[in-house]
Image 1 (cartoon, rainbow, N blue to C red):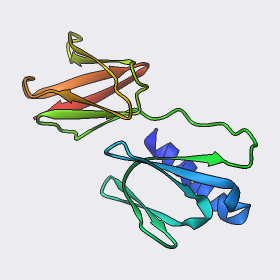
Image 2 (spheres, rainbow, N blue to C red; image 1 turned 120 degrees about the horizontal axis):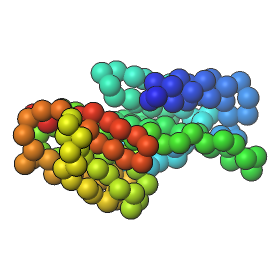
Image 3 (spheres, one colour; image 1 turned 90 degrees about the vertical axis):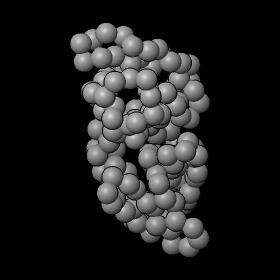
Image 4 (tube, rainbow, N blue to C red; image 1 turned 180 degrees about the vertical axis):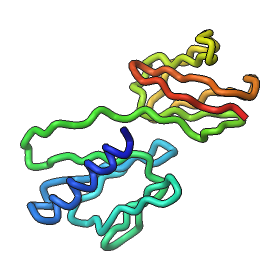
Length: 154
């Protein structure tokens, strides 16, 4: 799913260069939950390397450690927005698992592979940190809304 969103972003990036790029803005979300907005025509390229994403700018500072990119039409024409992706990091995790892409106050549930509910946590704005240090090593499931993600506890 994340690859599809990235590919969709790249298609929009290329289309923006041929069309009226000033009418679109790109919004990035970093791993620490910081959101930044850029005019699409100022973007030189998007680089994917070792599960990280960097947005290279034509001028100024590059956007690094990006976890999500979305695009918005600023001409006033309504466009469809993709649902944000839910993701966790680091994976594998030792002490604190960070969950991004979950709406504030939604419920995040942690389950064992046997389906036993271990912990319920309300989602926070931007990112939710969950202490998993007391869990035994193994594979667990995180459920947020309709999305289920497997993570490994070291």
